[in-house]
Length: 588
Image (cartoon, rainbow, N blue to C red; front, side):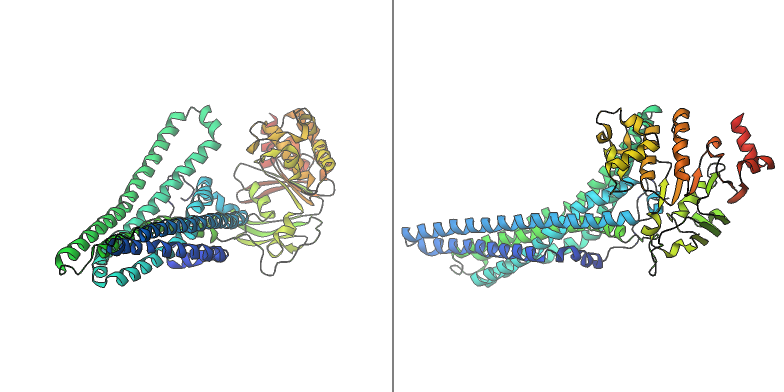
């Protein structure tokens, strides 16, 4: 099961370098800035490599000749080279910081846009915390690799080449000694790279699990306290936290093998230079200045090697994050416009189900061969036991899910062959979960139609009886509300959601338990507004309180994967069937 906080996510495909190549789409956009940064880094590197040559000149010539004027000039030149290298490096770093932030922006923008288009089934199958961590944490890590990491990688390679040129220019034999540690370093990297990648993938999994459980508990904090689950939840979180810590320590164990190995090899190579220069080679062959310059270059040569090993660490650590990001971007948008989809045009509201079969999971049908026709302007109530498929039917009309077989038409047009925007823009949908966004009440209602005036917003609120409680709030319609409307009652949230739906002026209206959290007095007032709204509109109303749907044109009793009964309230009551039993059980 994928939708669990304690189940590790499995990658659909193993990583290959096509993922890295694909990531260059984000890098290429800023190649001008990256080239400028690279050029500045090269200038800084070349200037920095002049230092050992100045030192060599001072030790071998200037100091023995006691030429104080030249010594002062050499000291000034060394100071100037150091300052110039630092300045170029600083400017290069600033350019790359800005580039990295731009890459973060682009990746997050693409991820968010794609997440907006993914079907409900994607969110049904995954804890939201595991989705959030990809958009926030993983993008942060990957962007640094794609910006500074790439430039640093190229720069360290160029540094090594430049240092090699300078070393062979100074003394070819000692240069070969300096390179003698590379084969050993290569063997070490080859031995640990696969285990290291797997270890960091495991860290990614444990981090996602912990984040998913944390997000779940923040949302469900009230339920936790109601049922005094604090200690049990803390125990579960401690377990997830401990798994993350263990995974991290395992991954760091492999990462920490790299830099000590590099440092030790560097130290041994520099010691070998002294042994070869002073003992192995004939006396007088290597001057003090040459030996000082070569050890300086050797130290600098192994610095980029060490930096490259650290970059490889970062690269391997972030590969798992890059895989997760592209896995999300590759998630298919299953509910999308067909290639030949056309706008549906202005609709009248005729809806037909033609032998519709649907399943959330393969092989487990919720609806089977369901057929019915609804005329424009007709009001349809859907009743029946919990889980029978009432909400599924209205979700299918809005094409939130694609049916398994059959067809659904609006005004005779198959909804799978029209554009989603043209269909949903003419539908007003109020689901059971009355979601309130952070912001003002005015903005929450205007969410239904962004070009609506303040007067239209207020008129919609008055129609559904929301104006009465809104006008009593501190800042009226400009009152700020928190995410999910935590400071509003359930009924108040539903009234705001109702006003939002009414404001969109839909041709087809879908009300899924629209009055479930509203008291009886308010519901009686609201019903007048609903009746006005229903005039001339096709409507589908789901309600467990059957007294609210007595006046609907038709009532469909949904059960056993289909429509068990259909008719007006009086007709169904006279049949004394399933609806009669349900209604009388509520009345008693």
